[in-house]
Image (cartoon, rainbow, N blue to C red; front, top):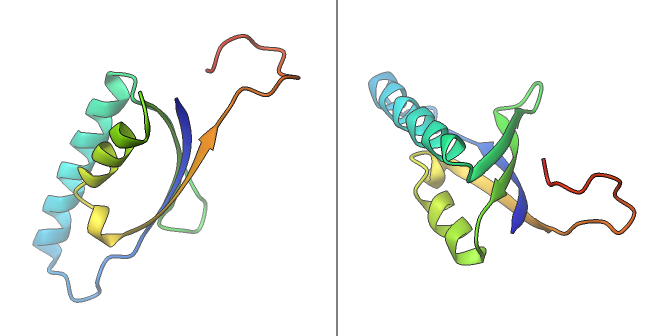
Length: 96
């Protein structure tokens, strides 16, 4: 199943810089691992915001939930999830 996920990050202003750097390092490694195995298909930064739009390709809602909960930044995110379906007028046969 494909999901469109918008993630807005709001780090606390009093979070120590060392903690921020460590969380961001773990977040990058985790997200790149998911990209390499094909679960996190696309990621785009939203200009002017600390946010991204992503496409996940997972088995079901439960798998998506587990992956999102595993994000080191999860507790600092406002996440919006939209399930996607192939449109009947789509020309392309794949989901790339």
